[in-house]
Image (cartoon, rainbow, N blue to C red; front, side, top):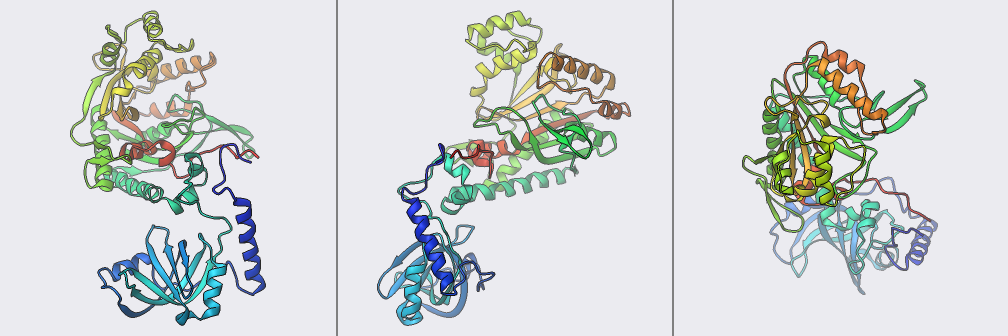
Length: 501
């Protein structure tokens, strides 16, 4: 028995037995419970659209064959009612009467069909005496027998079960179907925005000989064909920068990244990521692009920059968005002045006062970022660019033009979580080598998130990369910002542990 996934019904074993007996009975009577095809002339949405506004108690004379899953069934003596539902959630009533189908067919419907079964019904399109658009059957065919019962309204599925059994969640919960269809609309909007700005979409390797482009712990694998270790990519950055060097000056990719780290309401080991690079741009121009991507996505799914979350709360993503300094936010949060030049000993004292647990491997910039997360992150509800991160935690970023110890890097926060990050990219290959060597030193000291020295990437940079602005944004987190849902609800099939027997 699973420790995390309760049965949908308390009497599930009995339900399974009965439904399997019905399947066997159908086969014995030469009735195929899983036919290759069934009659289907129109979808339910087509019927709904064609007969909208039809008056009460009207017989159209139109014969159609419709399919759907049985989600409601009421059997009376001479007249049976059922509700058919298609995958998009459209529903239609089916009616079976004794005088239309005969006793044998009606009895078979009553005995053989269960909630969850998929059927094909052929008959006349009518409106009932109550005005409900319906199909009055003259025949029906089983399309697929469901061997498991659907959850009932009195015992809804838990969050864990919804995630684990998303296929059932999609059947029974309109919100799940809506969420699944939201992502394609957002993806189309993102690609449209990039296309309008003359960006080229590319695909870069997910299996890499070394991990780089972000500070994260990778998943490690092994290639039998090449007899060497490989890594699932943590970011596409280093390959996209190779594209910029090669002359694809406006480039983007939307694809999967993998980070062997924690999982919570805003983190998933496997996630969808947008990364883009714009030659002759910088951290400010890439911020403008990021804002356009988010606002256009909001417009595509909500028709407005104001989006309504699943709990009814509204979030305004319009306007120019606020900008704050990382170190100003830290200073405000701790009640004393903190800059990029504040020694790590002073930062440790501040962290101890805040009751923070300090990892001894943290360098100065990492500790400053952790203090920021502790004192300021949750206050950033409206869209906010947090500007100016430490140089020592930003090995691929250009140093700030004016502020020592600061990199031209921003993080975009919405609803208290980081949605995107953007840079003025470091393009000096000599400085870049020094930065990566420093990262490799940290890795040798036990930092599992440190980057490696990628010689091919450095060689590419030595062919001259133009001044560039770059950004990365999580697609799953963008959907969080648009819906207010946690990351496991914005990912259709998030990673879950196997069930324990």
